[in-house]
Image 1 (cartoon, helix red, strand yellow):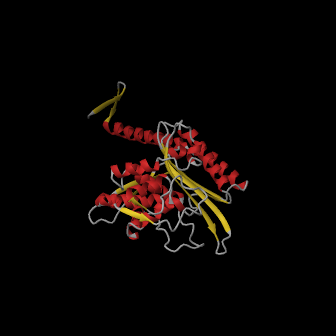
Image 2 (tube, rainbow, N blue to C red):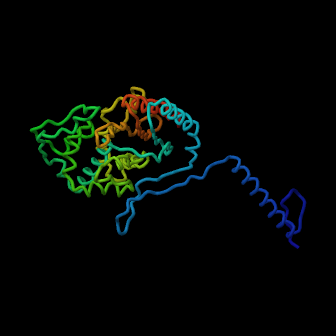
Image 3 (spheres, helix red, strand yellow):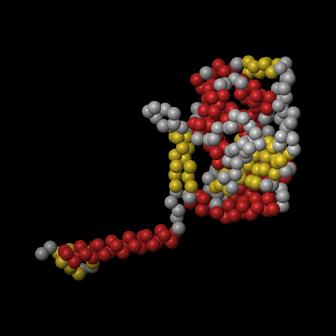
Length: 337
């Protein structure tokens, strides 16, 4: 009979030794299972967002991760943000507020009118086209100055194109993004087939803007969907690296210091875009105003994407809301390795 010596000097017949090994295995597995259940470590749910539209490849754009340990880590922050948001709404400073931060979502089902935020996908569509047709950036476009799309804006552009002048498409991108000039944006939209513009949305899995605006479809985009534009730019997974860098250099202009940037220390930079909308009925009565800000904050030790969308009755109240949320998040993010 073969004997196995595995517990001190005591010898057991092989069949008994095998039984004891199995028992030790069950016990170890049970203890291991109990330990990790007590840790309550969530299992990350990862979903790949791919571009599609090709026959033989399926390019990866970014990953959506939910129920991660990072979200558990930010649970105290979520409670603080939710309390801040509820207080603003209770005080009549806003009617709805949504937020996206590192996968943490608050009121993500709410929809808004993106307004000037649409300048970012407009820029992306131009730069995407320019990758295969670089000559478009030097194309000259005439602005006659007859229509002024900035006239109804509460937050005026820092600079705007002047009637009677030619501007290259590259210059118009600067005016549209860096200074938020609506006249430049209108000219740029006419430089591409609109189907090419809409393709950016379908490629990223974002709802295509309605072609005929009315009071029933004015609000159509949620904060998580809009964040996709900034995610693919930062990851350089939709545009080339050089074009993505070009886009962020334009977004890094400080065109809206009242929003996210006002909640940051003076030495922390951001690359962002804001949008404002005034919702009126057919009698021109103001039903609501909306103000949004979205962008990457270059905080140390780790930059983060923050998107905030708000609706209410007063732009100043909404500015203060965005600033306050930005400050709360920075105070947490700057302490997180």
